[in-house]
Length: 398
Ligand code: FES
Ligand SMILES: [Fe+2]
Image (cartoon, rainbow, N blue to C red; front, side):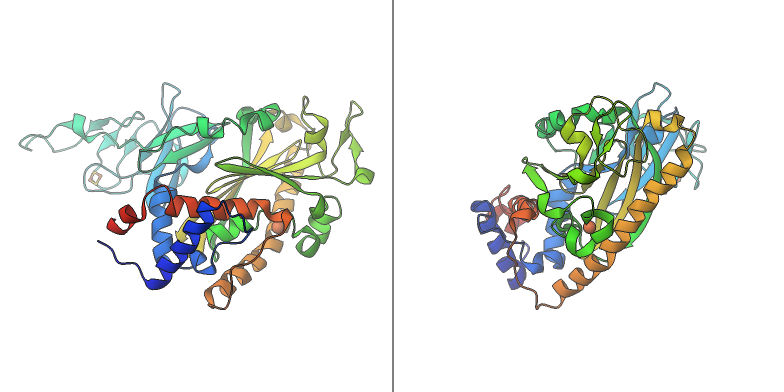
């Protein structure tokens, strides 16, 4: 039986009522929720371990033997393409005495543990374990790498650490038709920007997802072309999607004469409708997955919690496969990546200041504008996950 601090109980009580009334009061979470280690511990179990976490793109391990390692909630995992073409996700921990098997990214024919040289196949089976013949009942079949539950949605690879989550795809089926025309399955990861540890909570990052702050914080990077006050939003159960139309007077024309937003780095995709060509989209699959989407390129921004108020962030730069055929591909890719760095550099100091303010104890629960429907949704979603999916009694007993 765990006894929660009084402040934690109070925060959970506030969240329980926000969950029950659907955040009808349009308020942020209580500031304590962004910095309290007990709330963070609950989030790790009930949101991150129990849910689906985006770890990257399937094309990042495209060929047999190609692998990408990640550390999610401190747990080393590896996604790996087998000789049979299947993408698998394994625990990156040796079944002998727990050494980490692979580092970074690369390509291997087999996985050899750097400690005592046990060898695993790309399917995770233990192939060789030197000097184990004298063990009384050693059975290599019981020493395969542990599989981590994974699913691929629109080319994005997700893992579920506790192995008990319901399937992901049905949760996002109401989002699919909204982005089907982009055919994201076929896009490729052109680059990854590792932003390292960021000194703010993953929920501060979610809050920063609205477009209300374009006028204040991004006058040139966004507001001149995409006025924040024109932004729209729609929310599903597990996601929200925002869009901002480019101003009519700055619209450009595609090769076939259709209106398109300015700021495209590659050729806008065929088959998009008017709305998709003239708006940029922000799609948030909760909890940690952000897609920035233009008619010609996009970003997958992955934010993972490290501790209360600290996270790790990386951005995968995504392009339609056809973009790589352009003679100016490298320059245009560099320009798009520079654009990400520019707006991210504008957001970073603000998020840092906000986290500091939340930790002073002076910050209060804040009212949200109609342009912050996403923030309202996230506050409700987090509140629901922490207080409703299990009873209070079950929570206290954990
Ligand atoms: S820890 Fe991997 S072989 Fe010993
Ligand atoms: Fe921003």
